[in-house]
Amino acid sequence: MSISNLKNTSLLKTKSYINGQWLDADSGQTFDVIDPANGEVIASVADLGVGETHRAIQAAEKAMQPWKKLTAKERSNILRKWYDLIMLNQDDLAIIMTAEQGKVLAESKGEVGYGASFVEWFAEEAKRVYGDVIPSTTIDRRSIAIKQAIGVVAAVTPWNFPNAMITRKAAPALAVGCAIVLKPASETPLSALALAELADQAGIPAGLFNVVVGTNAVDIGKELTSNPLVKKFTFTGSTPIGKLLIQQCSNTVKRTSMELGGNAPVIVFADADLDKAVSGALIAKFRNAGQTCICANRIIVEDSIYDEFIEKFTAQVKQFTLGNGFDENTTIGPLITSKATKNIQALVNDAKEKGAKVLTGGNIDTLGDNFYQPTVIVNLNNEMRIAREEIFGPVATIFKFSTEQEAITMANDTEFGLASYIFTKDMSRVWRVSEAVEYGMVGVNEVAISSEIIPFGGIKESGQGREGSKYGLDDYLEIKYICLGDI
Ligand code: SIN
Image (cartoon, helix red, strand yellow):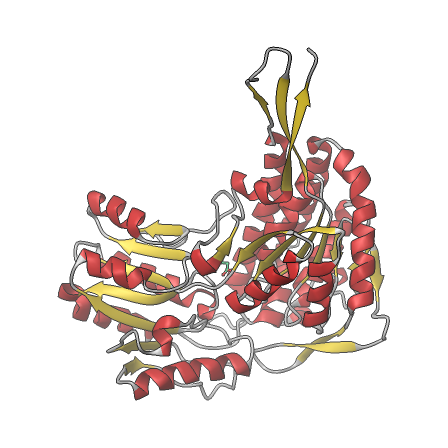
């Protein structure tokens, strides 16, 4: 299996999609999209810049004027067609994703379904954007609050989920009447362009969904964050870049929502179902080869079950098969680049130098520079970089605690606050610990916490705003107060 197995070859686009047109770069420049599993060039893609981004924003502003005046149901009907086409092309979209991102094909297929679910959900949910009639303070007045589309949305999305992180932003924006200009990661532009092709086929009017692909992320980012026509900026990516983008947005006081880095703890109490905790921690750690913001970064286990947990967990990790995401036996694919594997090696080496012990893995694999061995590390402490930084790879770190309070303190000892997980059967503890951990999301005896119906997002330096759920519309809406006098 490879990109040559695509049934619908119209999905493989190499130009950007602006104002309903497929465009080359003004400069004529292109860049290569590389398969991380074997280093082969999948496609040569137009490398756009600031001028094209500027024009996309202008087109978006124009296109959203009639779009926002449609009824929510009219917009919903068009978005529903987009959803249907994404699902119809699920297998092909998964092939494109595995080719450019590396994840195991079954995971890519899962992500396409996950991504489509946001389109379906928000097409429905936007029909329920209610305002309020506020009881008046004087008899001759009526006070009303209505919600309106915020305006042109700019989005920058990451390579780890090349489909779902786009639809999670584009669907609510379009559903409430906004237009969007998207800059996908230059490692994985093909999934974004395939979504644009399907948006076109679904009849989403020109100028509403624009995809600007380019390697000059700094300058394109500056245009997206400084152009006064953009009213809202949304980003999924690292915390340092997120902070910079928030600063850039402050000059024109744009609304921002940020889904940034994480340092998720998995706390396993002695009263947990141990086998479920082991399999949960494995999924939380190794999904997408450890390249998700909500991946388990620290597994924190109560001392009385620590040895047994490690034994069972490590035995399972040794069963993983590293390889090309297209191979049926592969359970863990390559990382996105060799820079990623080198960063992880530096974290592992730092831990080893400070006394950590590697139980399995611990090296870049002989399969190639982008493959990192599934790894388990113990004997850790908080002085090690690996305990404080987002690992973003298939390396599990296992810590020990002896009291509930110690586990909570360890879990909260980070500037991040995205996802956390708890394994216990004690219901009082479930409440106590869920309320005490400083995270936007808590999975209790469950790690598959993501879906279109839940408010995904973090606190502290993991971000602001929520994506998915009924709350996911709020970031794309302004509240307008209307005072009716002389009644
Ligand atoms: C992310 O890692 O940014 C998203 C993960 C998810 O949606 O489950």
